[in-house]
Amino acid sequence: MKRTEIIKIDPDNPDIHEIKRAAAIIKNKGLVAFPTETVYGLGADGLCADAVDKIFLAKDRPKGNPLILHIASPDDMPQVAKEIPPIAKKLIQTFWPGPLTLVLPKKPHVPYQVSAGLPTIGLRMPDNIIALTLIAETGTILAAPSANISGRPSPTNAKHVVDDMWNKIDLILDGGSTSLGVESTVLDLTEDPPRILRPGSVTYEDLTDVVGEVQKPLGGQEGKLSPGQSYQGLKYTHYSPGIPFFLVEGEPQAVIRRIQKEAGKYRDRAEKTGIMSSEENKEQYHGYADIVKSLGPKGDMTQIAANLYRVLRDFETSGIHILFAEGYSEAGLGFAVMNRLREATKGHIIYA
Ligand code: AMP
Ligand code: MG
Image 1 (cartoon, rainbow, N blue to C red):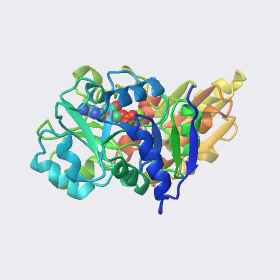
Image 2 (cartoon, rainbow, N blue to C red):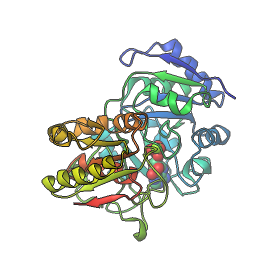
Image 3 (cartoon, rainbow, N blue to C red):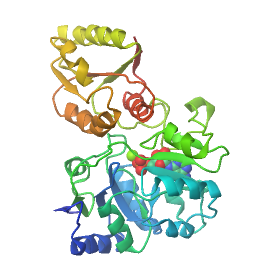
């Protein structure tokens, strides 16, 4: 068994000696968890097959789910991308560093484990000083999926990483809570117009503003989705708390009434129930559940996204037997939030 070390790092002014130590671990084929602006990543040398194998082992990740490569500068793209189309340059100017992953044709030396056998790679430059300094110090390109056990909600603080990865990895850089809280948007540039494979922190509206037409993800049966993405939990489990979880979608008043009714039923059977509510609705659930937690105001999707995984993990350890959540509008960041909620329920969706 490995021994994991954890060190606190100032996110605004990281101690370069600590970062150099972390970089040395990565150059030595080790695993280091670090904060990005989206969620915590589990980093390894993305150009070394042995190091990448260790990520799949530590996370218990299905081999068919490719990893995103992380770079510290757009200048490093040609090391791994075979072609960089003009549209990529436009997107990079607007969104990098930031939560946009570009899918591009890969160079042959990128280990097949990284791309899960696909002819493409996912590539991004994160907007976080700890992450950027670490990548630059390694002198390589980091493969870094979210630092959770496969299938679980992504980690948005170092404690979440400790809970999932303790004694499975070498080092955790604790840079506090991540700011965005949902993962990057994955955009496939091998299609024209480009297609969103996984909704994320850069919204559909943000993308169409810059490049015009953008295709939305296809449903599971129709084929093209990011390999790691299932369709409402049908392929791989994703973002899931370890308790039965139901999402209730529909007209806002009907959603409240339906959650009251469903949660009340379980409560009458003496099962401990939880409700994940918006701030404005939480009073409505008094007496219907044992624990009600708010994600934030409905009008502030940024806050709801930032809190989502932490609240899911808090519910998991709260002793409830069943959890209900309200659905949100799919405009803007709501598209990514609803994607994560639907996936987290493994298809348990109630239409009110
Ligand atoms: P994670 O880093 O855990 O958020 O997972 C990375 C996700 O990026 C995968 O689940 C895929 O959905 C996506 N991804 C990475 N590389 C590719 C690629 N070459 N083609 C399509 N999707 C990709
Ligand atoms: Mg993940």
